[in-house]
Structure formats: C-alpha cells, structure tokens
Image (tube, rainbow, N blue to C red; front, side, top):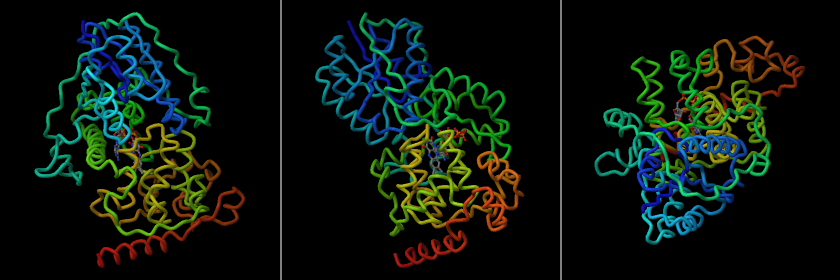
Length: 448
Ligand code: FAD
C-alpha cells in the first residue's frame, strides 16, 4: 500500500497543484502543513495572519475532497520524518522553491527521510522553474529582456487536475492556532482576506473587470494578487493561461515574468537576498532619524510618504510607489537598501525574498538594472503617475485640500499651510542629494 505525504509550503491551493496531484495518486494521502514556529516568530504579523486564512481555507477544500489538513508545529524535517513513521509513508511530495530557507528545508528533508522517497515538483511556485531557462554556459539570466524573450517562447507545463477525491487514513489533524496565538504583534488595519477561495474570486474579478484599466497610480488599477501568488493560493500558470491577448493582459503577464525572473536570479545566487548582487562600492550613510522619518511616512516628500502610509495601513504598496520610496531611501538618502528591504518585509503581506530583495537591489543599482546609476525624481514621478494627486490625497488626508502643484513638489507648499497641517518640511534637498549620488557613482564607475 502506497501512502504519500503531501507537504504544503507556498502552494496553498487544491487547483493546479502538481504536488497534490501526484501525492493523490498513492493509495492514501496525508496533506500536511508544518508551522515552523522559529520562522513564524520572526515573520511579519501581516503575513502570518494571511497565512492562517490560507490554511483555514485549504483545510475546508481538503475536507470537501474527503480528507483534511494535518497541522504540526516544529522543524519541518523533524515533523515530516515523525509523520512518515506514524503513517508508514513511502513518499513525500513537496514544491521546489528558491529561498535559502526553502533550500535548507529541502536538504534537511533529504537527510531526515531514510527509505522514504522525497519528490520535489517544479513549476508550482513559479510558472517556469528557475534554472530551466538559462543562456548557454550560464546558470541564470542577469538581464530581463532576453529572459522574457525566452520565457515567452517556452511552453508552460499542462495544468494539473484537481483530484476528485482524496483517501486519507483516519488520524488526528491538530488544531489551527488563532491569530492571537501566532501573531500577537500589531496588524495593518486594511489587510486582504487570505486563501485560495478569496484568491480565485479576485482572479475572476480581475479578468472580468479590472485588467482593462491596468495601470499606474492615478485612476489605473493593479490586480492585488501578489499575496495570493506569494502563498500559492493562485497558480501563476493558471493566471497566464487565462489571460487574453489584449494589451493590458499582455502587460500583466509580463509582470508575472518579472516574478519568475527574480526567482531565477535568487535561485542561482541565494546570497543575493542579503548581499549586493553587483557591488558598486557604496559607502551607505548612517542616519537613523532619516530612516525613521522614511518608515513613518514623514519625509516631507508627499509621494514617498503616501506610499509609506499605504504600506502601514494596507500591508501593501503600489509598485510605482515601491520604486519611488526605494529609490529615495537608497539613492537620495543613500541609506543601505537592506534597511529598507527589511522594513518592507516587516509589513508587506506579499513580502517575498525573491521579489522584494531583488527589486530593492534593482532600485539601489546593486542588482540587475542595466542603468544602475539613474535616480528617480519624486516630483517628476508624481507629476507623471499621479497627475491629479489622487493617490497622494488618499493616503495623506491631512494634505487633501492643498493644490496639486504643492503635492507634487513640496517646494511649492506654503510653509504656514504645511505647519498648520502638522506635515514636516522635506528632510533633504532632493535635487542636491540626487546629483551627489550620481556624481559619486559615476566617479566610482570610471575609476573601477
Ligand atoms: P500586478 O501589477 O497586478 O502584477 C501581477 C503580479 O506580477 C504581482 O502580483 C507580482 O507577483 C508580479 N509582479 C508585478 N511586478 C513585479 C515586479 N516588479 N517584480 C516581481 N514581480 C512582480 N512583489 C512581491 O510580490 N513581493 C514583494 O515583497 C515585493 N517587494 C517589492 C519591493 C520593491 C522595492 C519593488 C520596487 C517592488 C516589489 N515587488 C514585490 C514587486 C511589485 O511591486 C509587486 O509585486 C506588485 O506591486 C504587487 O501588486 P499587484 O499584485 O497588484 O501587481
């Protein structure tokens, strides 16, 4: 009798899940999630709360298929090995993943499972498996455009069928902890609900209504699928498969390719999660007060502050403001990108080492950007992407009645009006700081 353990990790779905599909081919299957408390204690409360929603939803879906979700707490390899003995499992199925944590987990599982097979399934977390597309003689693409060309030309794996029914041995499944037990920290007030059901509803609405307006800060909209993709509540392959051929749909699919791109960079260079991918000889400044002002959304630069306030209240930020806020921290303030990346990870419900830290490196010019010395000008960005100031007004209500000109450029803000609204003056002369950054980088590039 074949008994398989289906170890869920970042694939918290029953649709298009090759891990579940393959495990379900055994005579009996035991769906399992291990709450690694050592990790959860360090993780962002926003993400832990979302994860708990995902697990509750997954448990419901598995029950409908005639099984349940076994929950264990502890180190994944130890807990899996224990369950293998308990149920006499002959195989453990798990998704391939790229972070250093996931790679350590996979190695520990390999060591802990003696006679039991470990089957690692590709193209579950990403659409194209990291490492499968690579330029000849190299282990990854370092530039997006050629990667995207190859990515677009490579067929996707077929969609995995959802099992019609699961046969699970009778056993205790364990209790799902409450939010309070697992994430006593403070949560952002406007978090989205987690789980595959909510994720699939969002996908439906996105393709039916949202994608036509896919766009930037002002008026446009984005899918907000990132947390569902991060936890695998929705499958990137199903998303690509459902996309039509309209221009916004193609632009959306391109963003999914960016996701795969960053994952394949991190898979090849796990240290790039923390170390400069391409060191530029930066001597980052230390300025705890400026960092604090940035975290709190009180830099005096409205477009930066609006983004940082959105992060605090929603645990999510629009891509455009992530870029502006990151460029401002790393290039204008010249503070170490790792500080900013960590602050994002402390709050983002979609916080993800591959996407977050590789995008931070891109913005800091230490990553894969082919023009690493360019600096975003917040005024020009705000004028271009939030021309009416709608986004700024939404997230900085204290400035809502000021003229748009003043929202775009704080030099046009009347100091008395600013003070009356309790809004700070700019903590830095942006033009001067940006020029200083460019000169310093150019000098280092020419002497390198
Ligand atoms: P949409 O525009 O609807 O895009 C669809 C999906 O494509 C997203 O859900 C995401 O999975 C992917 N995607 C979009 N843009 C990018 C991108 N630039 N890089 C990689 N994937 C992308 N994304 C995360 O998922 N987690 C992070 O921790 C994260 N941190 C970031 C930090 C910085 C400094 C920057 C500049 C970007 C970061 N991003 C991160 C990428 C991007 O900002 C978010 O994926 C996007 O804003 C999520 O919103 P959405 O789902 O509505 O995106």
